[in-house]
Image 1 (cartoon, rainbow, N blue to C red):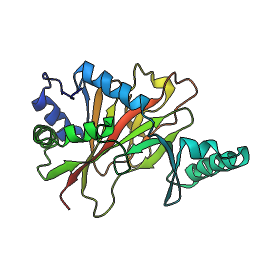
Image 2 (cartoon, rainbow, N blue to C red):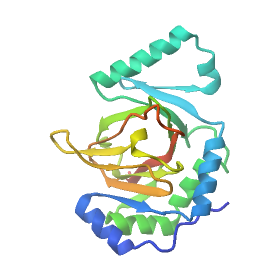
Image 3 (cartoon, rainbow, N blue to C red):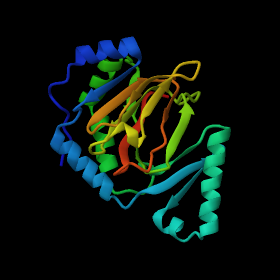
Length: 234
């Protein structure tokens, strides 16, 4: 199914809100039928991998490789993830990356092509006010209980990141389940938090301190999204 954005977006109001706050949520970004189809296809994908970091090293395990680990190895991974989160930047979630060998018609590739179409790039520039945005990248993320992304600001010199986005595709979500996109002030106070509501696109300027809060055991389903950056030509 071809992706389609909703026709009733108030672009002027969205642009004004982004200019004021540096972050927005766009509810009903896609038509509901295409959002449901995208979320379903992504959920059923066999391309998911567990990803986490040890310091600056990123490690990935596909389902078969992780299943082959013994209990001691899995406990060691879990210990390292928690210890890393106590000490500094840490993430742990499932992912699909476009840079890997996924099919041309895979849901992630379809979404990335859609977001890089001329009409969508024009919309992104209008909403953010960043006329230098040339393209968007994106990867799929799936957070289950115990998975998280600690506080960081997305800035890496030379990457050309002007803004970040999160296209939320989970079904009904309750804030008690965790998985909130949280924004912080200089003192570490949460100044805003976005619940990952279905078919809602979050967009925020880079740099900006944020995290994805720990998904709790209460979560009835994974926090499913496609996320990435709006990039200047480099």
